[in-house]
Length: 194
Image (cartoon, rainbow, N blue to C red; front, side):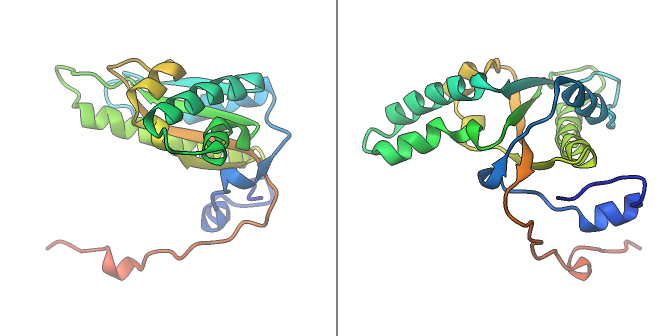
């Protein structure tokens, strides 16, 4: 678990931060007070025009299983050749972690603020939510899954036709050691313009 606390500097935290795998998460999940704190921290992002072009849908406890039934039914309709194992996996998408928070982009045409900037703000909310969870001692992973791009699955989650799912943030405690992944070489990514 990566945790930021008084003994650890922010730079050390960022240098060691890793995402956990939702597939290896266990409980307990955060309390309502901790969820509220995470969401408050998540919204402290760049937001041109102060539009708050995002919102949250919380999936915890039995709600994770209930939405899983909708995912299972939709997956069966899209993939009638898939068997019981595949359907069970889809039904359990949100039960892998004790808490899943959907970050919904509500970006819309604006006279001054481009939709793209509003969508970028939603992405910043997703990552801030991951950082907030980790700072409070939880593990987290930002995913999308197929449900982020399927109209019927989005509707089942409560996402309207004019919205997009920016991310699903899985929050819990990892049951396996976190492994670092290879990081890109900056020399291949950076250009000093002149």
